[in-house]
Image 1 (cartoon, rainbow, N blue to C red):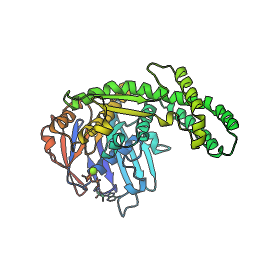
Image 2: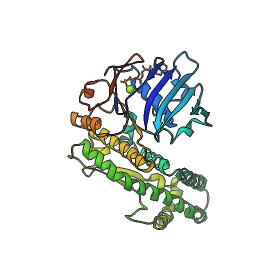
Image 3: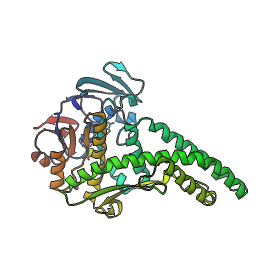
Image 4: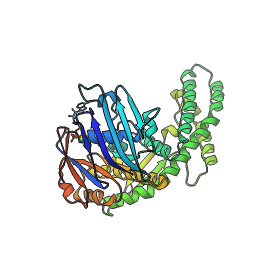
Length: 368
Ligand SMILES: Nc1ncnc2c1ncn2[C@@H]1O[C@H](COP(=O)(O)OP(=O)(O)OP(=O)(O)O)[C@@H](O)[C@H]1O
Ligand SMILES: [Mg+2]
């Protein structure tokens, strides 16, 4: 899968232009605030996802303009395709001339993976982001998992609503009422736990291999899904039984707290480097490398299943990485189309092949 041409009009600070990258590594170099991330963002929108910066649609329309128009000529499944995005208050999209009901419907047609400095929160912040990473990656592989997540969220919300107003009721009565929810919550939680563990088992060897390459074989990355209900090789039925026991034991604590203190909504992915948690002990470069390894492993898994190589968008990935880690990125993401932004184009000189663009005040110039 690769971008052949991006046509931009009225998008952020970018001047109206046609941008034609190569099929390999593309370096987007320039000083701060010139439009490098804006250019990645414009391409990224064609994955159907929202902006990786969390921007609202209308914020992407250039100041003083009514609308932004983007067009992407790309090749997927060996076929040349074209998608058009028009952004006013919201996005409207056509694919090969046919209007789609929503921008999200582009998902699966043009596939990409993005790394941006904000993704470092995957290591640095709390477990919610790590659960979201695993859940959304699993949704890409198994779309039905969206419904599994929604079902779990619905039951949990009902149980929590009961717990909030149960404090006035007699404890024995309240505990009996809770037991009614616990069976369905245990089954729904087990589906989440089993899916997440399966995903981590697939992701782990790929992420470990990429991290091994990044660190020149000096450090080892391991992933573990931390769940009170999961022991190695447990079946879904065993996990559900474990959850049921856990919920039963936690009823008194849940009533005292007024919410569910145990469940799949408290699980976490533990990322370790040489056996110790990256969140606590990892250096800046190690944390950046670990996030990158997770993101590239996610894309590799997607590629194994869909048979198509996604496009990699790497925003400001080079800073804080030493030369050997930079070289690994430049030379070892073979066969993928890659876009890398950086302030210093010197890294590009060590690159095997590709194009270098300079972004200056929203203008894109091919410099090599
Ligand atoms: N809707 C908009 N209309 C016009 N300009 C905008 C709009 N949104 C953002 N900008 C401007 O685009 C400029 C470039 O932003 P961008 O994030 O692409 O910079 P960058 O080259 O990635 O810089 P850095 O190296 O600091 O990450 C910003 O200075 C911002 O003011
Ligand atoms: Mg930027």
